[in-house]
Length: 310
Image (cartoon, rainbow, N blue to C red; front, side, top):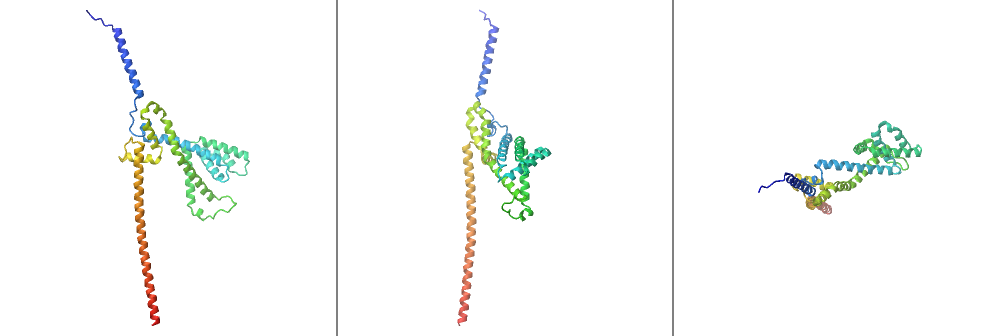
C-alpha cells in the first residue's frame, strides 16, 4: 500500500519546529549571562577602561560643577566670602560671555550699586554658570588658581604687611583668600566624588541586573572597587602586573590592598626605627664626647688649683 505524503502538512510541521527553535533560542538569550566578562569595566557594560573614565568623568564633572554653582549662589552674599566669590564668579562668566558680560560684571562688583540691580545681576550670572560647559568652567577655575599661586610666590606679595583691622583686604590678600576658597571647593569635590560615581554606576547597571541577575554580585563588587579611587588604581596596577585577576572579587582585592598597605607601613616603621637608632647613636656619641670634654676641663681646673697651691 503506497504512503501518500501530504506536502502541506509536512511544511506546516517544519514551520512549527523552526518557530519553536527560534522561540527557545530567544528565551535562552534573554536569560543567558553576558559574555563580556573580560574585566570589571566590561561587566558593568562599558566598552573599556577609557570608556568608563570618559563617561563617569562627564557625569561627575557635571554634578560637581552644579554643586559649586550652588555654593557660589549661597556664599556670594556672605561677608566672609563675598569679595572672593564675586571675583571667581565674574571671571568664569566672563570667560564664557566675553564683552557681553561687562555690564553685569560692573553691577556685581560695584559696591555703590543699587541692591536690587546687583541682586538681579547675580541671579543672571548664576544662570550663566549653571548652563556653562563644566569642563570649560573647571579649566577657568584652574587658571584662576594658578594665577593666585603664582602671585603669592612674588616678592611683592611677600613684602606686603599684614592687613590692618577694619580695612578691606589688599589685592595680594584677595589672591590668598581666592586660593584658599578654591582649595576648599576641591576638598568638597573629593568628598563627593566617590558617592557620585557609585550613584552613576548603580543607575547604569540597573537594566543589566534585571536582564542578567546571575552576575549581579559581580557587578556589585565591581562598583565597590571602581567607585573608590585608591582601590580602582590598585586594581588597574594589579591587573597590569599580574597580581590580580581581571574579574577579581571585592574581598580578594581589598584583602591584597590591605596587606600591601600593611607591608608598606611596616617597612616605613622599620626605616623610621633605624633612623631613630642612628640618631640615638649620634646623640650618645655627642653625650660621651661632651662628658669627656667636661672631664678634661675638670682635670685641667684641678691641675691648675694644685699648681697654684703648691
